[in-house]
Image (cartoon, rainbow over all chains, first blue to last red; front, side, top):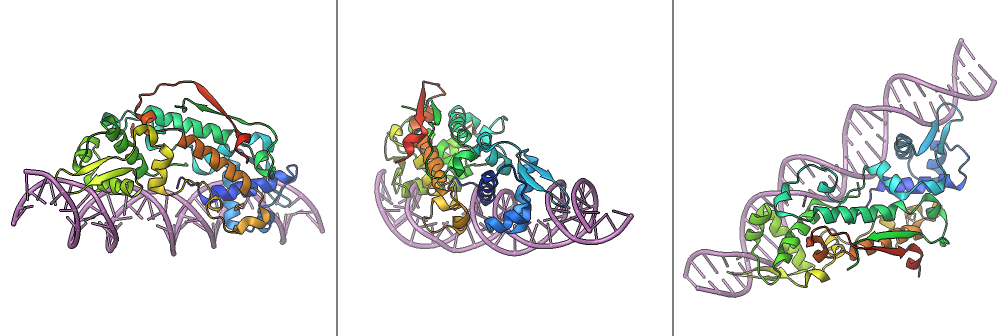
Length: 149
Length: 149
DNA sequence: TTAAATAGGACTAGAATGGTCCTCAATCGA
DNA sequence: TCGATTGAGGACCATTCTAGTCCTATTTAA
Ligand code: FES
Ligand code: FES
């Protein structure tokens, strides 16, 4: 199904909410209340996003989380890799080791291309694009390198 | 990691092999021998591909599998959906039901856009492209906004 | 008829995922 | 200072998904 994990989905919801007023610190509990996602889960996701340097956290009373960058500078690709690790469709496009199939298979190079293409697509969409409701005014260009036949 | 399943990976390997001489029937055992994938697994995959109308099978002695279409007409997207079901990154972009998050979430529309983009990318790569050893032709630009309709 | 093939499932072991919970550390404010 | 608040960092479990095997029935060529 080529799906991303539920946690990643949640992450985008959370980040979208935070992007609405980016200058304000939000506590995990507040976010849980607003989004309807269970607190422990929210907490887990927020921690991951902090580790990915995507959020900045403040401990203690009145603490919370705030976006580390502006919404325009946070790509969907970054969110995905924060939650799920590097974006790689196939095994052998991530490990540069020798592949088991290597002998009977010449497709590795082209898989890399597909990977790159999808990565580009995801890189070109930012949090700002996600929150902007139904109109994306600017033209975002996605280079579909080499894939035209 | 946004990965596709191992079976899908195998499927591309198998199909790539079959595309080399498309006019010939290949038995499951032969394919297993050539690709190094275990026979039962190969068999399972081939059955799935038949169900997806991607291969045509012949039973009985001297039977086997053959591509149902030309390699140029088999897209990677089709292979993926054959093995993993419809390509949809998020839950709510596949079920058009009301989403749990629906109240606090305006991003559905834009996820659909991302989905569409990735789908287009995968649709534009064919089996023929996969077997063609890694040439990098021209860059084709696709404006994201053109996907709004 | 017999051997060679696929069709269609059932089935299992193992891994990954989603989700919860607990303890520790930091910060604020009374 | 002390207590309340909030995040950090893991451990942990239940459930689902995946990969892989295997069995039986059906079809076809020789
Ligand atoms: S499957 Fe790894 S190189 Fe082809
Ligand atoms: S998560 Fe389903 S509509 Fe936003």
